[in-house]
Amino acid sequence: MTSRARLEKVLEELQRNPYYDKYAQKIAKLQQTSPEEFLQRVEQQEKKIHEKQEKREKAANFYQTEAKPALEPGTQTKETRLDSIMKVDMIKDKSKEEIIEIWNEYHKQKDCICGTMTPEQYDKMFARGKQYSTFLLPLPREQGYEFIMCQFYGSEVHMTPLLWYQTHKENAPECLTMIHYTELREDKGIILMCGDFDTKLLRVQEAQCLANELQLYYCNDHEHRLQLLEMFTNRPDEFKHMDLIAQLETISLELNNTETKR
Image (cartoon, rainbow, N blue to C red; front, top):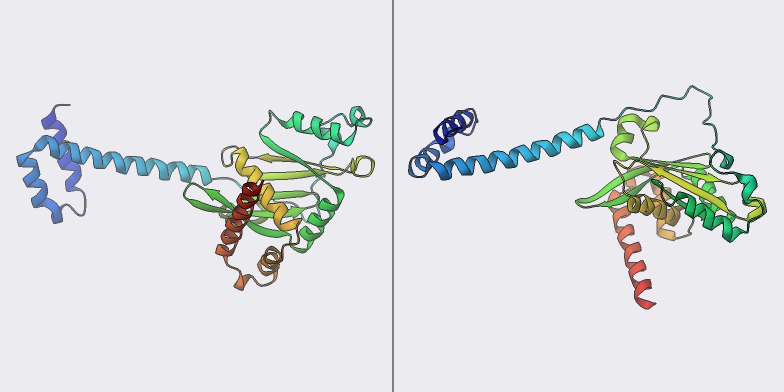
């Protein structure tokens, strides 16, 4: 396209803009004195607008998710067993430490997180999970924080972005699902955990961050965190989202101070 034809096309588009009349004189002056500069400025502005529109469209497409099928009244989700992913008979003679190593190695190359808990940690987490079955966790993002809703169900913890939860409630698609396997509890004294996450939404570090936050609230007896759990469940009108962010930043400071002392 020649410069003249391009210029005419740009002017045609500009005249459709509702703010054209306000800046018509300045546009005409720049067009007469330096048409190439005028064309360059308009194209740069159009490029920025186009980039912003692309970002909005990508975000919109990303959040256009479908709800999970609603559960029929009285039905229960079938609990996942350890033997569905591992040959349990082959690890019966292994020590606790060997099983932990095998478990970590097995999941190393998969899009998931994994870990182990003591029976005491598990009991505390899920006893508290019955008392406070739903909670919010702040996830650090480049532009601030995103709130993730977590729900306890049986020996599982389901997490979903708050936006999805507000749209689909209990049928919202998960961004992270943490399953706890208790089959080795009596013989080996360990609980195995595997967390599958949506790679379109979370990086492995972010999934691990959510798992760590969950333990800080549900496995520890920190007074302020317990108050936030209680307030979210029983006094939602008094609950403030910013308190979660402040608490997370406090945790980060605690961790940094610990690392400095070592």
